[in-house]
Length: 554
Image 1: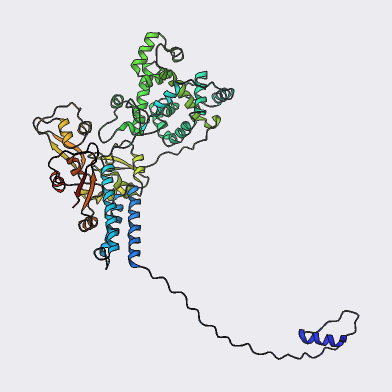
Image 2: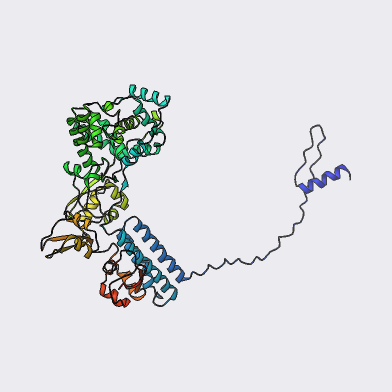
C-alpha cells in the first residue's frame, strides 16, 4: 500500500489531522468521511424486586424483650438499686401478661412467664438472705497480724544499696519523728522492698485518700505528722480491718480503748472504722502515751502495740527507758513489739520518698463527699439508687456502718460529692414506709435472752448487741427488746410478679439445710409453720437435712 493511501486510512479512522514532522513537506488535509454507526439496540432489563423482609415472630420478639428487661433488672440489683430492679422485673412480667395473645393463651409466653417468675422469686430469696438491711458488713484480716508474723521470721540483711538509699534519704528528707538509721530499720526497708513489696505499694495507694485529713488532725492535736504512716503498719489503711484480737479500723483500736476515746460501738455502727473519728481518737491516744513516757516517741509507739501497762512494767523491771536498748534482748518485751518501731520507721521512710526505694509515687487524692442527716433507719441501697452510685461506693464512704441500714434515729450519712441536694429532696418527699421498720418484743416474766434469741432464730450476741445489753443481762417483765429483723423483704411489694405467681408458679420446693427450723423457713417465705405442716402433711416440727418441702408462695 502506498504511503499516501496509508495516511488517508489513518486520518479517516482517527478523525484528526496528522502533523508531519519538521522538515517534511505539508500534505493538504483530507476531508474526514464519517462512518455510519448503527443506533444502540434497546435492551429490556427486568426490574429487580428486593427480597422480602423476614417475618418477625411476635412471640419470639416478646420473649426477647422480656429477657432484656429482666437482664437490666439483674444489673440494677447487682448495684444495689432495688427500686429500679423491682420496676424492671415488673415490666418484664407485665409485658407477657398484657400482650393480646399473652401468657394466659400462648404456650411459649406461658413458659417464659414461669421462668421469669421462678428466677425473680429466687432473687428475692437471695436478697432476703444477703441483703435484709441487717446484713453485717464484711471485714478483712488486719495487716498487723500478718506483718508481725512475717517479722518473727529471719529478717533479710540490708544490701549496700539499701543502706546507701536510707543514708541519702535521711540526709535530704525532713522528718518530724526521730528516724534511726540502724540495721533493724534497714532490714525492714529491705523486707518492704522484697517479699512485702505489693503490700507496701497497695497501702501507699490507699493512704493517699486519707493522708490530708489525717495530717490536718495530727497538726491540730500537736503530734508529729510522720505518725500518719503508723497506720500503714497497723491496717494498711483498710477501714474494715479486724484483727484476731478484735482491734478494728485504720488505727486498730481495741473495744475498750475505742470506748475510752469516745468511739461509739453498737450493733448498727462501729466508729473505730470511721476514718475521721478514729483518727482524732488515735491522735489523742498517741499524745497521752507520749506524755506517759516523758516525751519519748519510740516508747509511745511501742506502747501503742504492747499496751501502756505492759511497756511500763518492762521499763520498771529493766530500769531501761531507751527503746533500742530495751529491745536488744527478749527478756522484757515480745518479738512483735521489738520489731514494731523499726517497722514503722521503715514505713515512714518509704512512704515519704517512695521513688528512692523503687516504689511508684502515688499522687494524693483526698476522699471527697457530702454529708446528709438521715432522720431514721434507711437502707443504703435506696441511697445508692438516689445518687446513681453502687451500694459498695456508699458503704466505702460510710465504713463505720455495720449494717446495710443506718441506725435507728438521726444519723449523718456521707454521700457522693454534689449529691446532698438530691438526697435531701428525696428525703423531704419520702413516704414513711420507705424507712426500715423493726420488730419489738415485750419480755415476759421468766424470759431470758437465750430463749428469745432461739424463738426468733437469731444469736444471743446479736440480740444483746442490738439492745446494748450484755449476753448475761437479766430481763424485766415488759422490757421492750428490739428484734434485729427487718419486717419487709428487700424485693417485697411486687404486684406484677405476685399476680403472675398466683396463676403460674404457686409453689416452690425448698431443701432443708443444717440449722433450719420450721419457724425460720416460715419467716423466710412469709408464711406460717401451720401452713408448711399442712402443705407437707407433717405430723411434727422435726426436720431432717435434705428434706424437701413444698412452699406455696401465695
